[in-house]
Length: 291
Image (tube, rainbow, N blue to C red):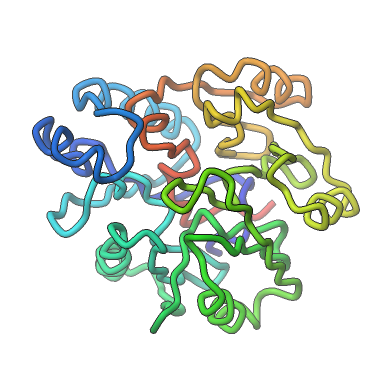
């Protein structure tokens, strides 16, 4: 079975190395402002950080696929989560609401076809959506953020494509926050790390959505504004309560440990913080184990 969970044991994942996404230091110097990075990443350090990150994944993940280099895509292709979303039956190919990332979906589609990974649908026409806006709450509940990266037409098509799988399809309106040029996904302020445990930044959450989670019995680990800005709300669960997160979010990491979690930290200044893409963004979960 493919993915309908954010936290079950991760068995198969797609990533892209900075060597292939960032290409060269000269390319980074030319492109980092175009892609709205905090500052120019250092490619050598990015490669070291990614190696550390992959070493953590190898402790839990059976199969790691690497997207190849391509001149058709840019720096943000390192964030492999966004061009596709997996369902229990296979992949849905998306198209980013960030125009400079829209070519990533066809690169991902071609890669999945080469790997013989099933594709059950693809967004068409005016529909745009990022994988970071699509969150499995449980096997039958899918939440989709409506913001600058995911529009109404994409939501309509996603509802149709998942109709036989999803009994509860929730649309979550996203705030303007820092503006259209910044990356705010649904997954920016929620990471589900176990069946009833989520890391959240409640200040950005619509009241109905927060109440919905509480009514379902979720415990919410709150992330401060300071650690939210450090991507502390972006937590990858490689198994229930086995978490990977960026260094520098000590309070959030300790809160997770207080809830019985194992926390793995990686230095992600170059591959995560500068591009505002944490460990969930760096990984596209293909398959998680049923519990």
